[in-house]
Image (cartoon, rainbow, N blue to C red; front, side):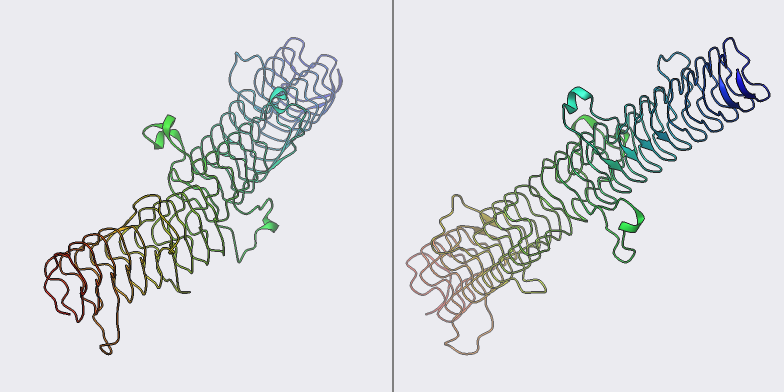
Length: 490
C-alpha cells in the first residue's frame, strides 16, 4: 500500500492491496475492497465485498457501501452516494462508472451502473435508476425504480441521442425510462411518466401516472434552468393528471395517462385532467386553443374553456368540452361532439360560431348571429343534434338538418329552412317594433315543431310538417301551412 490509511480501515482480506491515495477512517471494509485503488476515499466509504476495487477517482464520505459498489469506478463521486443493501447482487451501484456523480445520488441496487454521463446531487436513487446513463441529469431528478434508464445500443442503433434532464424531474418508478428527449424542470412526475418519450417536455409538464409516455412531440414551455423561468409569467405546465402511482387507480393496465402517445405539439396549460388527450394528434386541452386558428384540423379531444379565438378549432373531429367556441367562426365545420354552454358569442363576439356543424351540440349553445348555421350548398352527411335552450341569435341554426331541443330558435331568422325536429317552446321572438319587423323564425321548416312554439311574428311560415298545440300565436305566424297546426291567425 502506498498512501495514508485511517483508523479502522482496510481490515479485510486483500482490502487495499496495492492501493494508493488517502483512505480515511472506517473505510474499505470488505474482502478485496479498495484493491488497487488509485485515489482518495472518504470516511466510512467502500464497505462491502469488492467495493471500490480498482477505483481511479476520488470518493466522498459514506459512499459506495454494498457489494461491488463503485467497482472499477473512473469518475468522481460525492458524499452519501452509490450505496445499496442487497448482499447477493452481482453488480453494485456505480460499478463501471466513468461519469461525474454528485452527493446523495445513485443509491439502490445497480443504480448508475455503467454511467458515463453527469449526475448531480440527490438524483438517480432507486433500484436500477440511471443504469447505463449517458445524459446530463440535474439535481433531485430520476428518483425511483428504473428511472431514466436509456435505450439499449441495439434500440438506439447508430443514432446519437444527447439529451438533458433538468432539476427535480423524472420522479417515480420507471419515469423517463428509455426517454430520449430533453426534460425541463419539474417535468415527468409520476410512475411511468415520459416512458419512451422522444419529445421535449416543458416546465411542470407530464405530471401524473403514465403521463406523456410514448410522446414524440414538444409539450409545454421549455425551462431547463431557473433563468429560463420568467418570475412574472411562470408556465403552468401541461398534461397533468391527479393519479401519480398505480395504486391511485382501479385498473392500472387500462389507465390512460395524460397525453400518452401524443404525436403533436401541445402548448402550455393544456390537457389537464385524468385520461385527457390520449393518442392525441393535434389536441390542446383546457384553457388552450385560444389563439387564432389554434387547433386547426384537430382530431383529438379538446378540453373545457377552449377555442376562444377566431377560426379556432376549425374542422375539428374530436370532442370539444364545456364553454368552448366563443369567437367568429370558431369550431366551424366541426365533426365532433361539442358540450354544453358552447358556440356562444363570447367577449369578442361570435358570429358564425360552430357553423356547418356535423355533430351533437349540448344545452345552452349556439348563441350569436349565424351560430350553428349551414351554408346553402353544404349538404350534411348525417342528421345532427342541437340540445335545448340553443340557437339564440339572428339566423342561428338556419339551413341545418339538426334536431333542435326545447326553448330554442330565438332571434330573427333563427332555424330557417331547418329539416330537423324542433322542440317545445321554440321559434320565439317577442319584441316587435312594427308590423313590418318580420322575425322569420323557423320558416320553411320540414319537420315537426313542438308545442307552444312559433311565437314570433311571421314565424313558421311555409312549414310543411305538424306544429304542436298552443303555437302560432303571433301575427302572421304559420301562414302558408298546409298541415295541421296550432291556433293562430294570418
